[in-house]
Length: 200
Image (cartoon, rainbow, N blue to C red; front, side, top):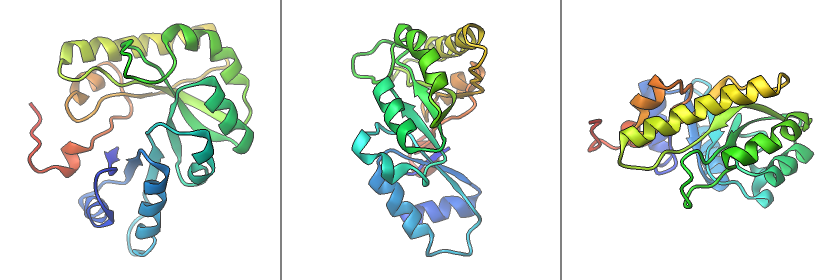
């Protein structure tokens, strides 16, 4: 996924010309701005936008119908709020696997407790899990991504009505271990849009 949150419409158009078809934004207003700008380019192929940032309940309506997948459902309250307005919206459950205080989302124990209720919400379709790893250490990142995969497997075994094929993890500096640990969606911003960024 090309994360276009730091660039304008022109750079997004350039990425489409380069072959990207799947984008993500982290603010509802920026998602609307990108879609409005791209609508002025009817010659472009169809592309998909996801929502990856923290979503406040008062911004839900701006995202529904525009984002194909919301990666950042980090509380039961937010899941219920989306469910009450959607029909149904595809979502990922954000899990704070690393336990960092600066990270949002369910703790592993919280998602174990809430999984059954989430599966029963009719206005959302839970597609998988999302996490972010601590920055700067690929070994810690790998353990975080492996933990997400293991948690997914545990939840599917405990809740046969939950099917969680998607694992959204890995960004520009740690997407390789994420892929090796089973990520199906990597979120690349600097790899795509920053010429000075080099993958090490």
